Length: 214
View 1: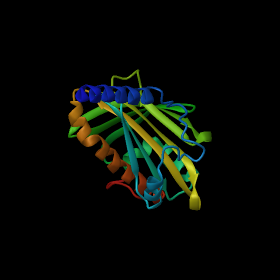
View 2 (view 1 turned 60 degrees about the vertical axis):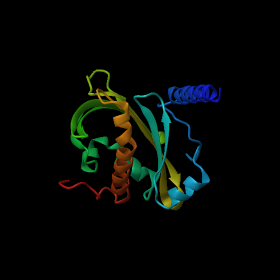
View 3 (view 1 turned 135 degrees about the vertical axis):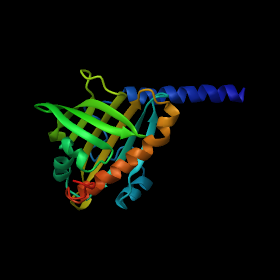
View 4 (view 1 turned 90 degrees about the vertical axis):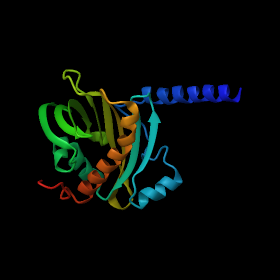
């Protein structure tokens, strides 16, 4: 009986998590006026000490929404300028082998990427949507291109923080084709954490902390 109750509870929890992601408003997420919604006091201490904090919400066996919070040592306008120039990612993310701007139309662009994941070459194309007034941009797979990824979504949102710094919320939901979910889960969060450390170095340095060759 106890085992049956645990199974039902786990099912309800999984469905609830799925509903959270399904209801996530990628075009205009609400983290509160200061962006701190959902951030605990202990996480705030970690953030003020320069650490990156994470939370992961399971959606299915194939993909999960990984959220992170981070403090950059630059004001929001500077952070926006550095990170919204998404074609510059190849300068500080060593996983990217090639990047090409396909089209830009107002606040939306199409960008093609080639990178290596577990030594596997991955090609995909995404659309970025930029909202400078709210210091927010998000992205998703371009439906007009046959990408090697099963699913990809993400966002950055920036807020003013003490001492002329920036508090940022980040989210990433990714699923690979032809790669078992258990294998994806072994590297996903670790890879994102490593990438965000490179992003922080790049932003905090004002764009001078780059990978070799750039």
